[in-house]
Length: 225
Image (cartoon, rainbow, N blue to C red; front, side):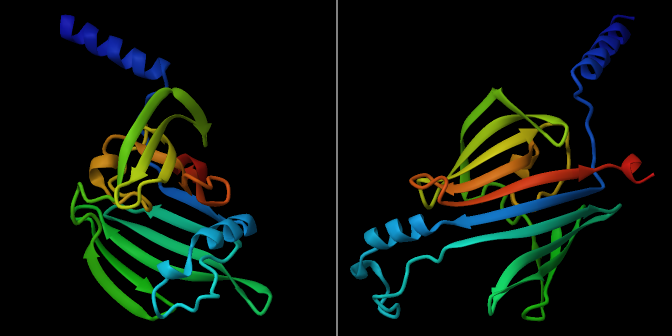
């Protein structure tokens, strides 16, 4: 009887606090990549010719200003995930949207097959070759710093690049979504703790001049009924 009462109490707490675990059938991720002219100007001033490889002309810019969008469509099937990616390209003054890659990820093994239309190349490999090999480490977790993302009450997590200190990822994450695959976080150790629904990857010295921002939109089965 005591065990039954404890279970009912736990269940009521989960319902009250909205902690129901959900599994989306589709996630749309919109990416926004920004490199401002101001960043290019500042970066060129500190990127001295002595630091350039011999094959790079001394008058070549270290970066090119851009303001472009991309999209990832993640489809959750019974035995695998489908990962479609598109991105904007500018040619002769016109913007084009191209398919950059198509991936199939097996749920049981996380083995990935990827096709790149631009090069017409098909490759197969393990999505998470090493659970602890993700090139960023968690440096801050603040569950009191919250933000509503696509209807989920998310909390703040910050990561820093291991290889390039000063390169950060700001994330708002939820523990209400459990999926074995995340298109931008190639670490099962990380996504077993929480699932990011907002990400901003940026240069710590120029957080608003050199960054990639990703926003997420989840779809669940009843939304298609």
